[in-house]
Length: 285
Length: 155
Image 1 (spheres, each protein chain N blue to C red):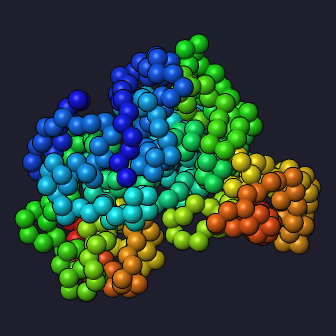
Image 2 (cartoon, chains in turn brown, red):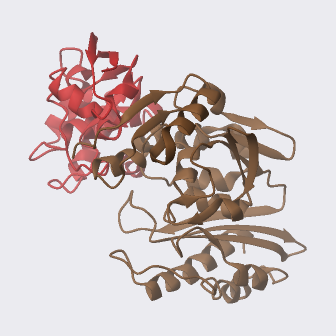
Image 3 (tube, chains in turn purple, blue):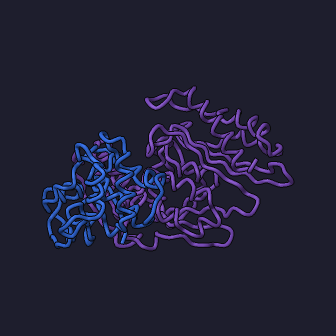
């Protein structure tokens, strides 16, 4: 379908983008790669009055080393994330998940910032940000602020970004030695959204699991942490049996949807099975 | 209306465009590149894949106005007036039936060979995961990409 008409502003600077958004009111939207937004425009599920294109703001692209963390510019494409040496060295979970986003052509255009700001609970990167405890960096008329993942994702396709704020980057902690990781998702066709996905991080010490962090994709209206499974895994032996006992608690406290792709109880089953597999892989058990 | 300048298959075009005009519609209706079809309307099928500044993109998932200043190669320009090795290999391996997916399949395959000149069968399937074919079952498409790769299509 042809999208409904909208005005278009190509931002020359970040401040220009913020002021264009502020002047555009609640119906203004940020666009860069457009891989989530343009399909919605074409299906006429979104009707922005104004699109502010931040795609030309080169400062927002690329990965910065900031000591104990990496800052990934919002405009860094999924393809760039998968090829970035800093990401490969310090945050392999993100690389692994970015490789599974859609397909190569979409990964050439789609950006980490767009994926996270779109906040689709079926999206892979919001879950990875949640599991990592990433911090989202936003710029608005009042300046810059940092928003933790737990506060950033609010509801289905909804974040705590104000209408005149632009997500400029994502700060992720470097994973030191001892951390293992695995992103797993179940989908019915090659490039489909996850029916359920699991991002698992495990820190091993002395043959046991010292700490586990688990994010779940599509198990609610926003990405969630599997708190009960994390608690059960912490201190457990790094064995298949012990991790299966933790994985069996992955769906506790979640409220997964029932839709064309799967019923809620099926999603709960997938979450338990995938969490077990992801924990085993991450722990090298 | 805003004005854009793009280079499509080696020819420069300058046009006024409505912001909502999709790149695929621009290519077909303004530049006459009807070799690039509109497929699924949901960014799934990949039939409309073209190269934008040297990398594959789905032209239905981009606004024409976002392509301002870009160099675009469509299936019509890939072979520089002749047949690209991938086009020849698709012909020789019978890698199509109805042909609707073929332009996008070949553009995606060209991108794969750009980054991986000698892919395995699994890597070919991964590289083409964004392109759907409803006729062939993909077997001959994979064979064709292998054949083109062996013929040095990436160079």
